[in-house]
Image (tube, rainbow, N blue to C red; front, side, top):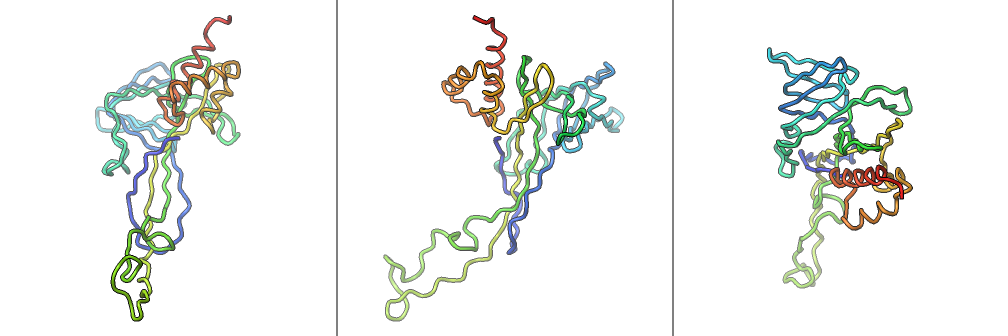
Length: 257
């Protein structure tokens, strides 16, 4: 999974790295076309919360309508707004306002529970197997390079060191200054998790995307390996993984020799 990484806060404290927090992303779009399970069609600015699996649709009168996956068949969106936590950071991913993204509601068993309607983004075209995605945000605390702790201070020349002039009495080097306090930064990443949906039913998590796609098409595994190698596909990249799945579907849909 490819991550968009930014440091958004520095904490000047001496504390161990905290455990990472994982939560579904909240994505916002200026335009949408929402198809309900009733057959009705709605439009307007939307936000999709992938932690709670809820769709928030802005109404002309200024109110917001909340839609659960069970009420939504699919929705197409365009004009993605930058993710709020990443919007003003130097390395933030800038969304393409022209890109159209398609989301579906599909039944999924979370942690081996009973299947329930869940939002998935469709990345590949129709076929025996469809590539899906869900996005989530990971935040964790990391030690910043060049601060406290052994081996973290770099590029420092102490007086009297080899190749420099000066030094203490008798030519001995003085003790190095005390290390600066360890600083920590909060690291935020937007991560992609991929799945395959099969025509006969069922959704499979791709723990190892390239390997798992090969396994989903065992009859064409060698051709898929050759295709991925020839085109130098990075299967942690959404677009390139979708290319591999689309090629696999074309092989599966072609007449048998």
